[in-house]
Image (cartoon, rainbow, N blue to C red; front, side, top):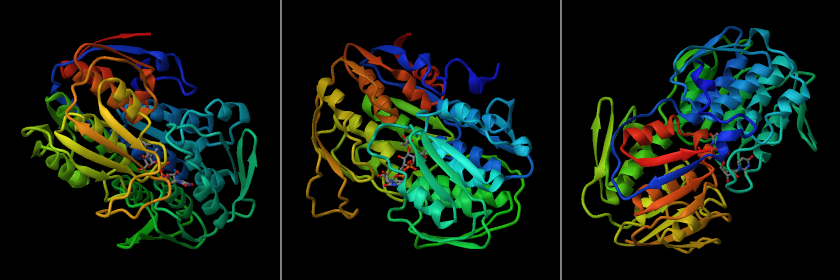
Length: 454
Ligand code: EPU
């Protein structure tokens, strides 16, 4: 069976498994080992990069998640032949790439935000692109103005239509001088994927420098691109005439690794996360230690557990090398068990603390300040769109009936339910499969007690 298209992943348009429900009997620690594969936030982008090559690419450690399924399906409607050589290894052959028809592309509307990254490669290949309305998690406005402005700087003509965005580049694309208003991950990837084959040199300032971006640069360099970067968020790209396919093993998913680490804290468990690496998680590990967590770094992974009573912390989410916005949700579940007041400032998205309402329903003491709160001792300059959550603990968590709102919020509901006494119901768990591979199998391996129903 083709595991990347197995029935455990929802269909691009949503699919049945989105509606699945977990009944969780909590109050026991999660103990054991989980394997973390390639990062969702690299694998999907590397798949798009394959469109730029003149020969086939091979991507290893591809996670079995629905975001990968969506990108695979979009590549296939554009004529890319995708074959699974073995479990987690994809061959992507773009030699038959063609313009897709509107209906085929539109079937993916609302399924993921990755389609926006098809723009540059499709413009190079076909001189035109159509991008459906974008999906992804509902965690704020998530505009695409940086992407469209960058594409215009390369010479693309951008037409917004009711059903999506039509782009064309009848005269090809040329290098550009771009400064991002904010070090956006997606916009940096957009510039990289477009500049590598544009005519001339591109200078990108205020670029994102997340490890997944560095891994994408490594992929593009294997393809023949010339990309250099300087310490102050400046990236130079010298456009080349042609690129070839790559053979690459994806960087590990540090968001998933951090999620299991927080699950160990929240349930007072002991989890070995195989595949996790220290370097890319330094900032997380500092916070994990300050909260009272203990960890052992091994060659093949990291073991996470409590080192004593949990302690409160103040955390500000930020772009790399700061504390990632994708780490705060499971951390907040653990902070409900820390003695005293913790504060989490969310500075990346304007609406990424709403998930805490369900934790309050489960007995947590969390107050969200939608306009943020003043705190003189801040590392991150205050952003207009930030929010803050104040968590007072410890509060015992009890069972509740909750509905998954988004990927990271959903994961945190599951670990809250596992930490809580009693039988909880967590609905709409398909969203969690957008980013957590073999999620239910891993929970079973860790000794979680649950049933799943459609
Ligand atoms: N932004 C704009 N205009 C743009 C693009 C971004 O205003 O054109 C703003 C966003 O609204 C947000 C901020 O810039 O306030 C940062 O957004 P960014 O572009 O960096 O995020 P992204 O590329 O859309 C990726 C990950 C997210 C992760 C963020 C931050 C993927 C597919 N998604 O999103 O991952 O939270 O970077 O690291 O790579 C997740 O995995 O759960 C997830 C949401």
